[in-house]
Length: 59
Image (cartoon, rainbow, N blue to C red; front, side, top):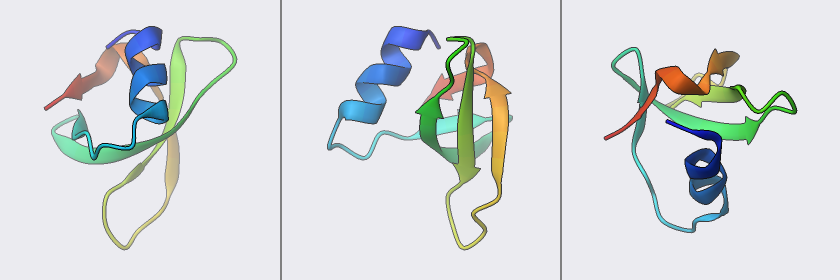
């Protein structure tokens, strides 16, 4: 995924399914470096993780 698509997903009101390592995640923000994003797992655990946006896959 690229930074422009991350921005589109963040500004969208639609529920867009994104996966990281095969697990569905919510994107919380695109980080200032433009290469990483803060995400958390869909579900009860809201542990946040910083990941490379190139590893995010739109489902």
